[in-house]
Image (cartoon, rainbow, N blue to C red; front, side, top):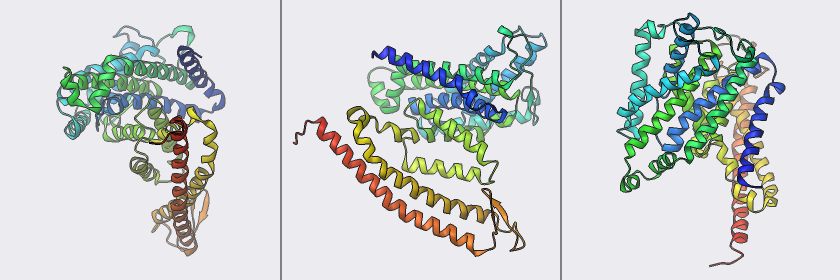
Length: 425
């Protein structure tokens, strides 16, 4: 099948998948979560233009997300009051994107003169500066209160009001498709290729006559535009925005999403956004240690899977393309590793949850609920069982991971031998 046809089928299948999701997850809570994932995915994709494509680590990218959200709130309120011309809500994200672009051009011109850790520190400084100004100036930032709006301020085409959450979901889904297509096209442009070159070898970019600082500045501005677009969609989705959207928590969250998913492809930030948003929503309802678990996941991915979780699947592409029959041979070792990891995690989570409740239960006969189970925290049995699971799981993990490594190396050796036609040198 021609490459163009394959791409067309891929985009068509992706659009159909996004369109069908509300049919499978039709509850109000599920739709709200899907909208959050869509906005987070766009924000993570924007961040990946800098981190994955150009190699710039930013600690303050929420600046453009949050400022664009405030700009969108102000525009919708002014447009609804007749002060500014009417613009359909479906196009308001462009206002946020353009505002993010303007801020990105100014901030990027200063911050991209440096790279590496100095650039990261400057990005953090700008974010903290604007976060402080958001409290000092209550006019544009509403002070410590959140800015509110009504997304139903005008008549939309085709009678759409964006009152029902399902309509907001489809708006976010359409913009997500547009952003994915736009960023994919950007990576294929000469500027996108130069961004990758700056990431890999900035000295060579200078040698061939290009300014690495200008390339970083342009990539920074493009990233700020898409981050602003995500911020405007965030404001439309919630109909309010607060100073917290400018702060360190939002910047850290998008960094964690992108790293966990993977920075080497467009699927990584989307997968990371979906995973982290779902974890944040689900775990926060059942445990007060959800942020600890998210931090532990981030550390594990950075240390053991530096390419991100999607890289686990992508490294199997050579085997899939060359000899798919070799993949089933890896399943037993993978399954053993998953079981061993689950046992170890059950013990570790049990210990952490028990530790978190120390002092909360004054009577040793009293019990607390941990993941739906009633547990007496001052009884020795939950502690012993958790330690046994954690210890035995760790031993099993060591054995299982060794088997995974052996199976992986033997499979790749077969592929290498078949590819070379059995020749040895």
